[in-house]
Image (cartoon, rainbow, N blue to C red; front, side, top):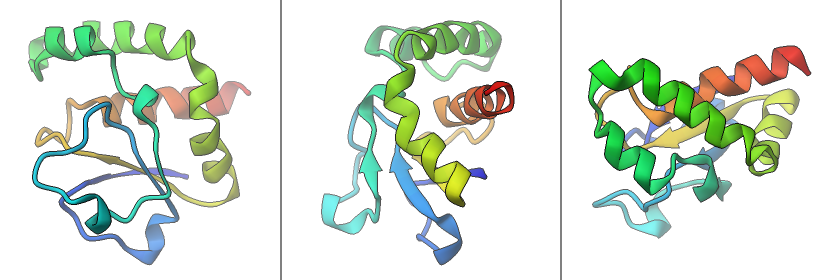
Amino acid sequence: MIQLKRVYDAPAREDGKRFLIERLWPRGIKKENLKIDGWIKEAGPSTELRKWFSHDPDKWDQFRERYFRELDRNRSVLKPILEASRAGTATLIYSSHDTEHSNAVALAEYLKKKASTA
């Protein structure tokens, strides 16, 4: 199972393995305070894509397409997340305030599609 949680939300036992999926460390969060099992920087969108998207919901569909192409070129970085989700729960930790149009939402969709076709 794959679930999402913002970095500002308290960790819970139900989170299973927790992975930060941002290229940049979230503002205002001390490393020792964020309980994660791994920081997978490469799972986040490229700097160019992130800047282009700029959290604009009107660009959401195009963002997802471009982001999925980036992920297709670098699938091996997702292995820890997929393994954790097969064994139990993997929680994708993200910092965006938009809970509907974030790279975490797109990544969860991508991972679920890949898991169902594997």
